[in-house]
Image (cartoon, rainbow, N blue to C red):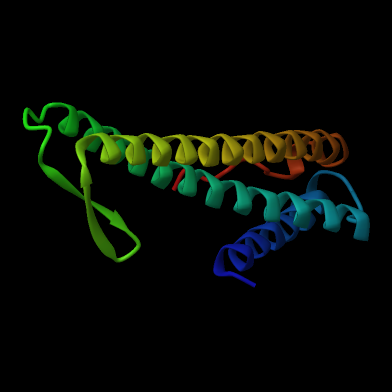
Amino acid sequence: MSSCELRAKFHATLNIISLKKTTTAVEDVNVTFEDQQKINKFARNTSRMTELKSEIEAKKKSLQNLQDASDDLMMLDDDSLLIPYQIGDVFISHTQEETQEMLEAAKEALEQEVKGLEEQVSAIQQVLGDLKVQLYAKFGNNINLEADES
């Protein structure tokens, strides 16, 4: 279990403890096993969404780097120069045209990866929205499912 998952479960447990303390003062709401499962699912999905967003940002930075390299390559005047292109840990020299094609292929692949990750985030947001509706319907203001901005 990753540290993000542990942290998410910890925060979910704190929410339940907070919920139990406030429910005695406000109203008596029982937290069932099913409710706890929903809260845990919410925490896991929130953690996963945070990880995906970080991965998207990293891939977008890589995409920008590829675009910058492509732009710099277009500015070269000498078509006879061999351009080193990194494949794994090795740099292989290619013509300007071959390097440009490789950069375009890498950009397309990265854009597809970003699109797939964004679709995953969207699906998780839908699940979180459904869980929020269910949990707020039962617990009202006695539960806090909003992300901390710290």
